[in-house]
Length: 104
Image 1 (spheres, rainbow, N blue to C red):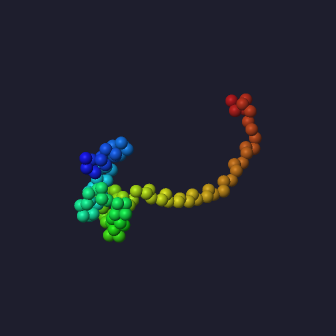
Image 2 (spheres, one colour):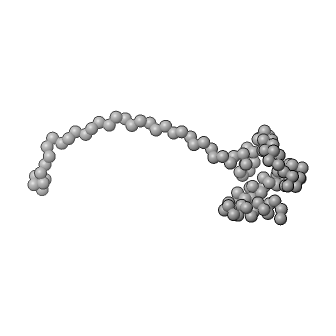
Image 3 (cartoon, rainbow, N blue to C red):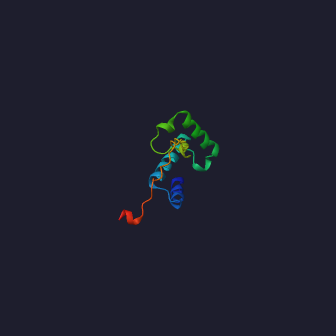
């Protein structure tokens, strides 16, 4: 069983969407080609980190279609200021309260 097949099994256990799985498979294939077609058992974390930094330096991740592994962190939530409400003046009480007989 190859790396892509193992990845598919793991991804299906994690309930990932098909588009996400396909995108991640594309990134694995790109790394395989750019690493000189070394077998996956020879890959190291340092090699993957270096490749990601090279992609960032070349600005490849910005132009890539789909999801970039560099963009896995969610973007920061913008801070929204809420304007203060203008001062509300109190309503005047009625001059006189009417009884039920007077209203009917």
